[in-house]
Amino acid sequence: MQWTVREAILSNTKFDRHFKEHGAAVYGRRSHWRSLHVDPILVFLLLLLMGGGLVVLYSASGKEFFYVKRQIIFMVVGLVAMAFVAQVSPRLLERWAWLPYLGGIALLIAVPLIGVGAKGAQRWIDLGAFRFQPSELMKIAVPLLLSSYLGSKILPPRFIHLLVAAVVLAIPAALVALQPDLGTAILLVTSGVFVVFLAGIKKIYLVVAAVGAMAAAPAMWFFVLHDYQKARILTLLDPQSDKLGAGWNIIQSTTAIGSGGLTGKGWLQGTQSHLEFLPESHTDFIIAVLSEEFGLTGVLILLGLYLLIILRGLILSLGAPTMFGRLLAGSITLTFFVYIFVNMGMVSGLLPVVGVPLPMVSYGGTSIVTLLLGFGLLMSVGSGRNQIG
Image 1: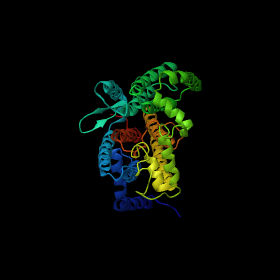
Image 2 (image 1 turned 90 degrees about the vertical axis):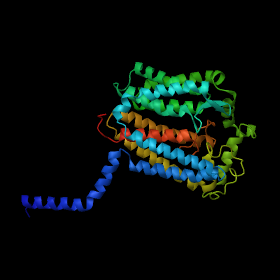
Image 3 (image 1 turned 135 degrees about the horizontal axis):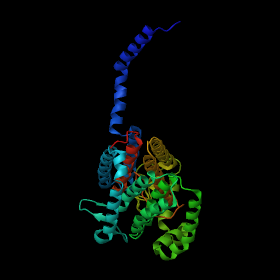
Image 4 (image 1 turned 45 degrees about the horizontal axis):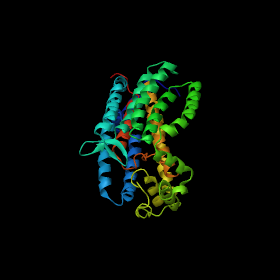
């Protein structure tokens, strides 16, 4: 049976009419999301994660609505900031990447001068209604600047380019370590290393860096680490050596995790947190509360949600049209993974306690806003839009 030109035209006309009647709404919704440069799948996953985090936070905080209400405010601010940053042209982000970096350095220098301290560390700047931690902002500013710098070079980067990247990374890391905040300094270094790694660093440089790190380890132990940091490392090897001191956190967190079993004791039924055996239950050790009340099942659901967010972030990074976008989106996604790994590792006794919150679940305003800002950058560079500013 022959297909004539007239039949083809009539067929196309019928298809156009059918699309206008039935498909325009679907296409319109897609165009609406695309015009906002916001990824609906990633937004849905983040909202689901934050909603579940509020449920756990209410129990971990001893049924205090104070923390929940403040957390909701931080989330709203972070979501607005994420949507705003997603509208910024990737070209403008690349061109002005040095501005947030220099601003962050200035804030880190200001912390010892006008900052406020807590628990032996001076890390925050008080603005009256709230206080924020400038070191958290550098986790975004550092990969942003390094992605802009290395993305404009011929890859893999030459030694001189790696040297410049090392200086860019070392300055804020040293300022954060002096607060002291070793955990944040490590995450800061990691965020920058991911950019260099994704840029295609030669293997010889990786070997030299690994050998140099091992050679510098003894000097760091004797001249850099504080006594309480050394105690945390030694306690990791034998928590029972100081049950009521440095080993208390790990012992109580592993007890809470183990007591949850497969399905947990039930929401608001945890004993370790509600009887105040578990320290920092609403911040760094909130995963122990989740494990005790929802068991292994709840932890696996949380890990599955994290995995979906990471996979979506990697997909968006692959869709970035420029090397700058791919480096930035990839480093933000991988740094998010490191957050999860370090927090769960320290709570379960596999890593030293370094004070890293569980992303989107632990209580903390600066952490949540910074993470959502990072996802806003990811959406901006991963939207695949034209690079005209």
